Image 1 (cartoon, one colour):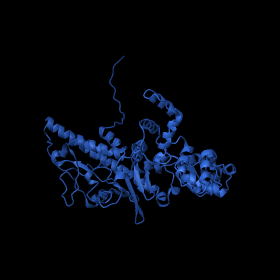
Image 2 (cartoon, helix red, strand yellow):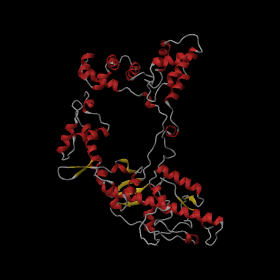
Image 3 (cartoon, helix red, strand yellow):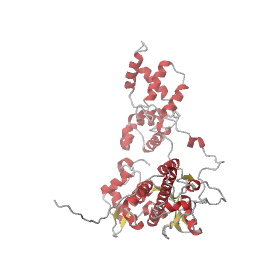
Image 4 (cartoon, helix red, strand yellow):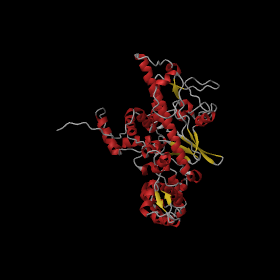
Length: 506
């Protein structure tokens, strides 16, 4: 084989560490971003948190900007109807900055985006009468709540062991996960080795009845019927039709669940007004008493973007409190020397370069999020004005073409990012939906169709609920062509039961 030299030209996409970092920060949620920034502050001495001081002079590392440009960046606000180019990257001042490459065409100063005029914290005022303990303290589990009541109840050692076993068998919804016979068998084996007197089933039932008197009402019930009967026994005995409610809950709960009111009235010998009262009594009970007491703490969604209407125009503003404001430490940055190759100077130079890359990635994430959110607001003005029924069909490709980015980038930006609107707080992915053709040749969003279905079901006659075929006909009258199976799929996604399960007495 003859050896030869050949020259070939080709293109290859290489992801630099800076680009990888920018993409990773782009897809992080608010909580993950805060953790990432905290880790960067702990590992890089060049980064520091910006302390807001009224009337203070800007530090040497802060970059000078035009007053109008600084005002626009300080609030992170953008009017979707007047889109402008990203601000140019001003040349950094200082001798140390000459040796640092400019790899990303964005602003390097994080503090330039959020100045001291950022909105104050949304927390309550010092004199707020809100319940501080309920928001700050960790929740109490159902077992802890029952054990606290057990410790206040006078009971023998043997009965206390039985009660502890019963409490351990209580699920989070308040019902038992084991039958009384299974509890008796386990306790008989446990107590048989310590006590010569064999354990009887009646003893377990007696202790179970005592535990069932604990708060919340209906706890430690064997099934749903038992749970409802326990709560009914705690109601005033002079309540009208209480005996009939016990009969329905104890013997005919299956008929009530299937809404077979005619058979229910015949077997219980009730008239329609009386059955209506009985149903109201049963519906006032809690089928899952344990849900009122949970150890899980409330999780709050922090919006990344605020949308508000000012002077008839929708404005988009980034939330300035989703991440701490950081910048480069001027004192450490001034220690970097250009011609010094010592280990200390190399350490400072490398950390300074990483700090500038990190700030650029944060700024890039900011600009991309604001740009995508503004484009979404521009296309979904109908939703902001009139609600979900006015939602327009939109896919990732539509936004990608508008902002000149790849669809994968739009997907990263809209994942776990939330927008605060007058209609509520929604994830950015909520605004993307498929379309359905209309009779006029237009398109209707699947989100809008779901909203229409929900509205039709809410306004239906409870005695004659709308079937899926009837909803299909009503939508066809509005010019929306949707198949019956599609209506069923949308209805199930909204957790709306079928028509036979929605039927009830008025």
